[in-house]
View (spheres, helix red, strand yellow):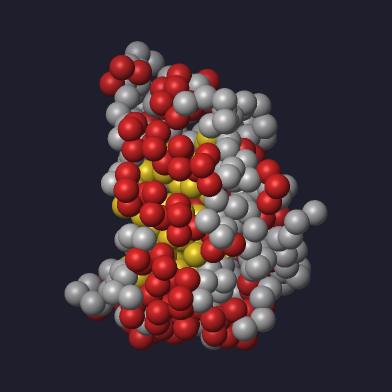
Length: 373
Ligand code: SF4
Ligand code: SF4
């Protein structure tokens, strides 16, 4: 299980490759209020957002650095009136653009304008299979009906469509209906991801965490559906951390594949990284993306394996999972450099198991919906 203390160090910085993706969080504005939203609890206001020219400069620098995929996200990116200009700029720069949307703000003409400017792909979030449950989770009346109409417009434009659902105790038993709905909407892919507990989801953990039995039923059902539908609907399934024995290789490693830029221009190695309080994240208004990626202290702090303590430091799995998620380690232990407590080799694993069992056994308090303070 363990390797000698003279474990190989991480790759030298000169071997650092380029990021593949840029996640551009264009805005935190969104008409929905999902209780698991990954946006921070202190949302950025409209007046603080990067303007059109600043975003296009970020895209240009990202492309020069080697980025190929641009994910236009939020909040709800459709809240930005300059979205067509941003999509057009991405196309001119040779970036593959993916719109990650709740699908309730853009009408048919607005979507057609984005398609005309070169949008490549749409990822639409659903909260549940039925309108009543979906609208109560998202805190937005008639949102589900608008989403279904939006999905039809996406396909009518000939754009590929991914349906994305965050799973939790209120919608897990909806899975068969969700899979049917994705088929009816002619989706190209279905992404089912259990809620991860930071941001608003951490605040609502007691209301969201499913029981172990519920997760086991859902996982078996998804595995069956993946086999049965493998030629019709690829299904990605992100399993829940709190019932796992080993952590995931979070973001494929800290600052290895993706740069996230927040609405006010802070550059992060993952969308939850701002929850770690002692990291000073650089801003694209002050530094180039290249220097942020290669030289910034925040991007280098947890890169590779040099930062690890025991038990990760001498563990044979350290290159495989890179110690799991730094944000989760901080959220559960108050120290980002500890092993992810999801791991059963972590000294914090038993406390996590007890916490999960207690939260899942409770009735679950009402949601605290995300909103601007
Ligand atoms: S998770 Fe919900 S509230 Fe958060 S940005 Fe997406 S649709 Fe809006
Ligand atoms: S989290 Fe650390 S201790 Fe656990 S398997 Fe990964 S490297 Fe090993």
